[in-house]
Length: 131
Image 1: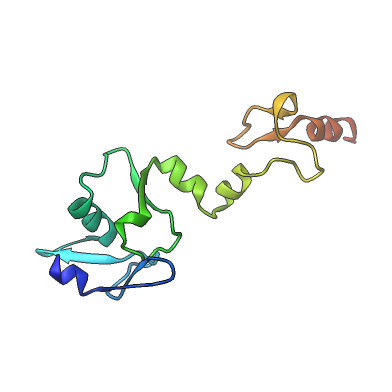
Image 2: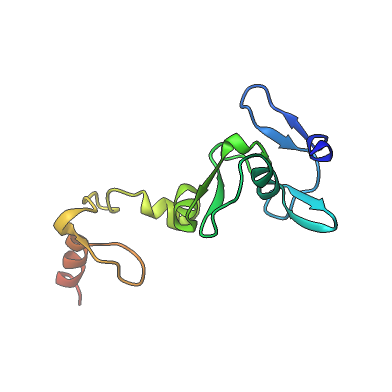
């Protein structure tokens, strides 16, 4: 633990523990113990909070990838972790209306077609206006 504590600096405004050591290509802190390299958040979480449930991933609630403060980590499902992010699927999942302003809910929302939501009003409009 002592070696780990030398590799981060507390950020007073946010409470983040900013990693000073190596990070992977995605910006997550890496830590090596007895020649085994893993994400530092997983190591510190196990040391200070306990076991990470098998079906869960650690999500940075602070949104800072190089933060290793276990108080800023929450075990969540892979789906929840993705939806909390800024990826295209996450952004689309948060949309409440289609591009034409129709609400994506209730009778206007068709079940997923090819893993996406479909606006019934827009689909009907497209079908009526086809060649």
